[in-house]
Length: 247
Length: 110
Image 1: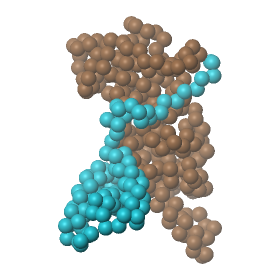
Image 2: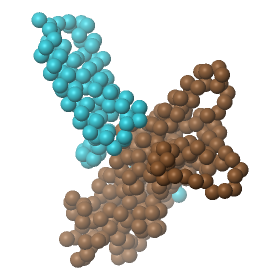
Image 3: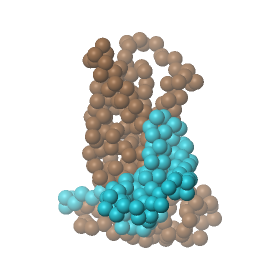
Image 4: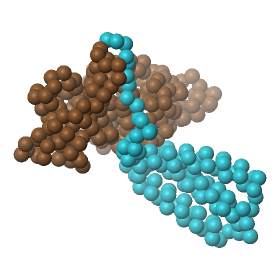
């Protein structure tokens, strides 16, 4: 079967408006051809100017996230044989500026991520490795959320990003969740940084991010954990004996 | 660069977008739309009291809004997010059952 790729094309240096271009893709006899393989075929045989991003090719790096037939996914993980129709639309991620064709600029997201200290700040100066039991409550709470590959699929699927471009987004809030839920981390004022209008309260629990995540993570779950944390922290602050103390 | 910066957005005018809309999003939309409809039917109910169609519609939107609210409440309190689709179905069934029960057994409009 010959597939037809309907690819989003836009070069800010040449085009004023984006357009769609169709390319035939022949997967041959193999049924193990991915959307990314099809993009390679187009780039190598039909149009060398087609721009897209990839790296590991085994769903580990998150570079090749695109919108396939209207739903976010990794091009290297999505099989051609799973496509319901012969015509496949491939578009760049939504809510992220397009650099060229299918390549998007993650700079804005990383800038927002930096604002909320996305790195581990140890509470103690102990140099011994921490012992974290897999069956501990804390480990179970954090669960798979540390497996985020920062592909941006959740950001693309989140309709709140549409209405509020300053919203931190599910990807960034998931990172904050992993750190705040970790008792070894000194939260500092990270909680107050994410508690604003553009933070956790912008999540309206649509679960789009959970449904599209290629690593089967639920950022929504993390965001709601943070909402509860902010709530309990607020209650603690009402108590005059606890006021001023961090967690 | 000619300075054109472009970010794709969800085009609600495109039918495909609605076809790809997922259950969690439908639950959210249904609750928001029912909230607006409550306001509309409540105002109508004040000006046109004891009209059975208006009473029924008001009751229907309140039932859906309340049951979907219970779903949100349960997830907010820490229920497993994997159950959100099941909870959506349960909320809709609960709303239909509540609507049927109240409409059938409580005296509305005589």
